[in-house]
Image 1 (spheres, helix red, strand yellow):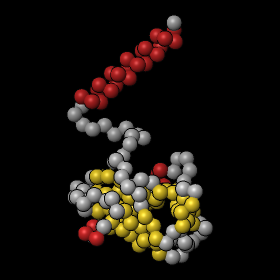
Image 2: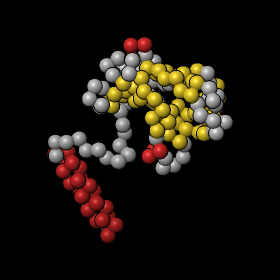
Image 3: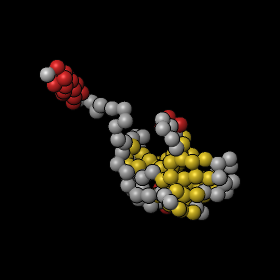
Image 4: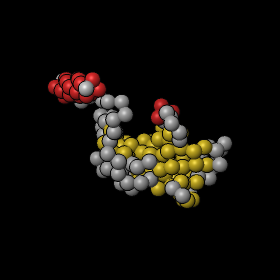
Length: 142
């Protein structure tokens, strides 16, 4: 009985917290909340794809493109995030494309030393707001 009562109190409090957040008139940003919708997959050249990972050549430029980038975007930024738990804060922009008339793409010199990471792109509007993101691609270099 005590456990049931505690669960009920927790659910009521959670409901009140949700109602307070919704009634504030502002969009609440919850940690871990999903970002923009994900669309399309990045393409990388040259790269080898096997077992869900793209192998990138080190010390060579790789062209990364996103064919599904939205036409209304004014900038697309490409991000690299190390693999592993708790690495979201280590996300780093590796470059941006502001000339989207020819599609969203980036020529990136892959560093030596080896790494494993997630690569994705985010399209931004004229106010710096996120419009849409690409799906994550798993990449590594040896």
